[in-house]
Length: 367
Ligand code: SF4
Image (tube, rainbow, N blue to C red; front, side):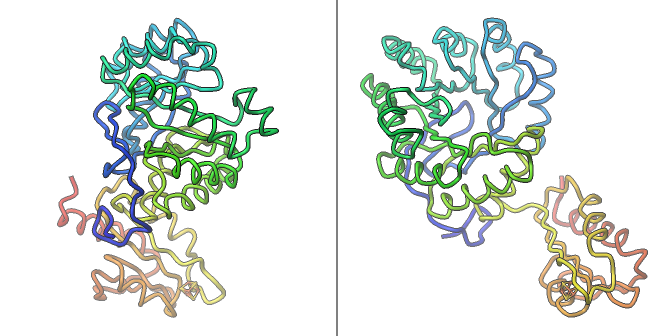
């Protein structure tokens, strides 16, 4: 199958039903969306809106804000009204905040089934209120807050336990003819998480929100999320993703988008093809690649720029790219669309590549 930019994709999407999170569709044939969560106190409306603006600029499609208190709930109407992207309120214990978030104009609400027994009798009212307001929900099962009954039955948050919790919770809403929800079954172990989502995808056509919870600091979290999402997305499982990092949320969005672009599930933007360098390198490839990446940051056209350390694979890769350099003997051969357009001294490589990239982007209609 072809991806959004016409290239190959890893696998056909598994059919799920489509739901709406404000202006963003999730599931079915909708593009896989990228989510993140603000880290500012929700009560600090200005700081939260500022962070949402940064996330939006980084390519975030849907943002979640925590709502642990009445003061947070009171901040939701302004945040929901002024955010450029749909806002989901994250509610754990208190059903009254679910109603507050719906009234506040949030596009969605995340509810946690580990706590739902506290408000069993209110599922019907929540389903009714959400339906009337056109708000969708996420049933967010999390290993850390698994229902005690299931924890005891399975001896821990196993894939089976996470799935049983999710399916049970889904049935509570479905009994009231409410179907506008997606499901997540998060665990901090990618292996458990992958198995849980695989099992869940066999049980129904719910759209699935992928996440490795508490994945860790940026390096570890990026790898955990990438391998887990890659394993699932390569089988067509997953409709929206959230990378969790102990790092600024903009980093989560960048990683999420890069995962989707790497799998051909999102149109590719700027791509730097740089070699790892080796004993043959005749130039400092790391610095060169870093300077070019920095110089081209924010470029939105799908430009492929090759930065190669020597003439072994250099000319070949540079030719395949829109723009490239193959370095050697203190010089760089600059390629544009497969043709050598000039040879420049090593000290001018970065500047020349950036100039040429800007010129090509201009021709391609960079906004
Ligand atoms: Fe080594 Fe040259 Fe390949 Fe770079 S392009 S990894 S320097 S052989």
